[in-house]
Image 1 (tube, helix red, strand yellow):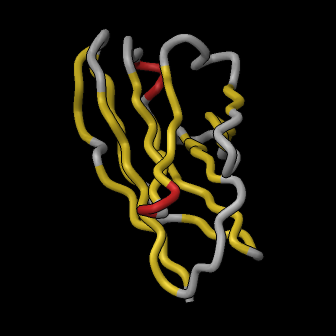
Image 2: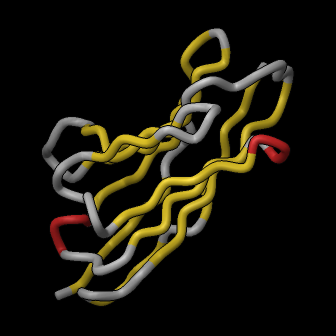
Image 3: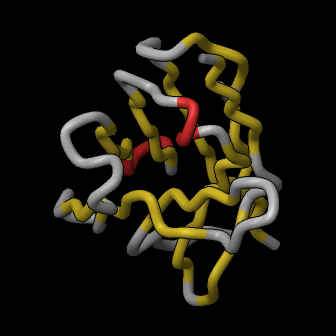
Length: 114
C-alpha cells in the first residue's frame, strides 16, 4: 500500500507565495514521475507540473515562470514552489506519483484572495 500526503496549502493574497509538499510512504521501490494537478470549483482536474526521477520538468503554460517543481528522491517527496499567485490559481492541488501504478494524494486547498 502506498500513501501520498500533501501539505502546505492555505490562504494567500494575490502576489504571494506558497510551497506545497507531498511525501510518499509505504511499499515503495522506486518512484518514476511525480506531478501536481489542480481542480478548481466546477472545473476538471488539470495538469500543473511534472518531474521525472532524473529531474526533467514540464509545466502548464499557465504556471510557467511562476511555479517550480522539485523532488527529493531520498525522501520520496515532491515540492511545488508557487510564486506570484493569482486568484485563478485557487484550487485543490493534488499530488500524483507513478509507482508501478498511479497514486494520488487527498488534495490540499490553495486559495488566493484578490
